Length: 379
Image 1 (cartoon, rainbow, N blue to C red):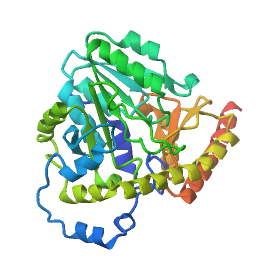
Image 2 (tube, rainbow, N blue to C red; image 1 turned 90 degrees about the vertical axis):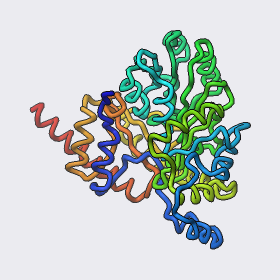
Image 3 (tube, rainbow, N blue to C red; image 1 turned 180 degrees about the vertical axis):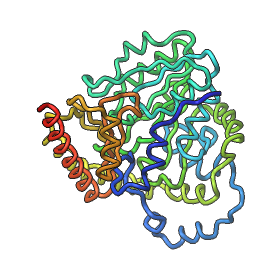
Image 4 (cartoon, rainbow, N blue to C red; image 1 turned 45 degrees about the vertical axis):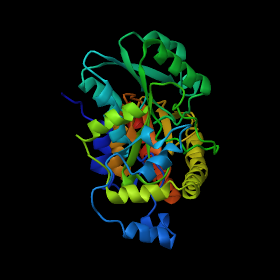
């Protein structure tokens, strides 16, 4: 198996802890353990955890609390993983064979598409359309699906656009998969981070061959826990547990214990309320900045997630722009090339508002310098 470079992950891994102003992240400001666990009894429960091997597919308590987030799911429908990325990996590894077709919604977090190509599949992009406010054309999907289609991979809410699929689009995707017996991998890691406070409907329960992945990183502000999961038919969760035996084996005991506390209904609701407050407070900062630069950028406001997907009207190379901002201004953001869409930038706005304002100010400085340089070149 030959894999292609995962440019987004390497870009962030190399630079996210070495730049002054990181606005490449797509989640909200992470919580500390102290902030998360305020109740003394809960804290004692964490401190008293024996650091042995946990139940490798997730404790019954934790899987039950995850299942409660999905209509009619039970603990046996859930497999705990080390982050949503492992969940996506297990689904792709467990389903895709050489010669299969995979339909991959784009732009998207590029993991599933890259893995599927590595496993020998023919990956067909299914593009979201800016003119449709980053919605897909479901008629195009009907043309892409063939009897060889093994998997349709979507991300909802979308990374990097922040768009949310309509109920009609979800039903159309399920119908298209059903015609050929394809599986749907629905990456729902941004579910819960909606601006309007209404949780995005899950694909789970809409079709018998759906596998939903998610975790506690983006909508919860807890990426350091590395808690992810997949939810699907019980027999498939059991099968993929066998694949899980060959990867991380299981979560840490502390991950399982803390995640169980996080998903207590009252604390769960509190965390999502915090996330949505951060989004509503911070987005106007970048929204106002974008309005001041309408001649330079295109932008469709996101419905969910702490991410702004920005198109460049000028003929600027987005990868070069991101590198210049990193090297000269100490600002890290994500170039569209890392989503197979040159000419766009992804900016995260989920962390400290002051840091965001400072980063945008430095981008203003870079723009001014770039304009001056362009005028000098023209002269």
